[in-house]
Image (cartoon, rainbow over all chains, first blue to last red):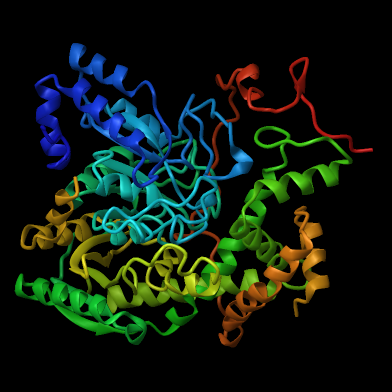
Length: 473
Length: 93
């Protein structure tokens, strides 16, 4: 049987040119419906029809005919969007997120909405109301999170590339756990209009593909200033000097907490880059050990404020009407899962009278210190990128950490500093151990996505870890 | 400190009705999350400014001009309870 999905966007383009989009899309939708990994929450029923039109009328666009999956916290006009929460079941947005609009303008076919941790709060996709997504490399393991469905869909050939969102690692962690490439852009590089907010000052829309090339093409399509998101930025105003130093910094902090085989493959990758002419030096950022605590204070505080809107009045779950406060409290008790409740409670507490200065305001100050640490390292040491493992561990077993929130939070140690600082970052596969993928993270200077993507491409061209995923497709 | 009574008070503020078993389950978890939060206590931040935007972006203004937006019926389409073109909330008095 013909395999349409083996060679990413470049390969699929030939099938589109040959007028086989409809056949390929039909087969893809059938595969999604088999639901082997629970990667999707909703399938877009009009995808095959869209494909037929493309075969008939051709048209143009850089993603013409490409079957793209979209995380279920990105608004899609006319297609149910739930954030994997019971409280939003049945919600059908009357508009498209800017990123979705841009995909469509470029000819992409949205094939479905992917599974995720409820409201993007999690590292494993296990907090989804619709059940956990499974890792295509090992079905007893988690795909990472929170964009686990978007990553599993790419790794299992249930789409060609996908959109996720990244608040504290939610694109990079699942990219790492599923052996694919993921990009979290600079804060403001991509519009958040239509992204259902959880933590506004941290979150970004990111892209995933079976190669860094595919992920960066998607990023190119969705990025750019948008008047509907006042925090989106015209990157040309910020573009850094194109001076290249040929040097990366290795974040060796916390290495004693990293699994041995993960560390081994990350070092191998660093030495490979060295062979390719990129020097490295070890770096240590003094305030980084406060990244997790300040990150979780900020994320939970913003979450408690953002999620106040779920009261069953304008959309979502609504029970029997009693007095207003009882009505709201019951809807929220029934509609939110445990992790979401915990985070709202913690955020409410840290913003409450008498604690604001101790927690939220203090965390914002620590955030500034961490930003200065990164700026200083890039400037003084003349670095093109800072590298680390994406995740300190290989993919967990399903259920292994879900009852212990703190141990789950600690696994975000290398991903959250990037959201606190707003910097861009990519995760690419750098090896396999016990049949499970391992990812390396490259962090770049603000609005210098290009450099880290180029380093990733050089690495990809000279290794074949990223090609392994095609064995699953 | 966060004991079960404090937790119930916070839940009232957050408008989430907690079951007794949730209070039992969440209390120790929330205490350990608070211990994580408290790690920043030791950081000296007296002369440090808080970060409200990572690149220091200030207010962005636009002209106050009317432009086409969502049709009324699309805007209220998702409301579970509505009447004569209005969204209907629960009783407040």
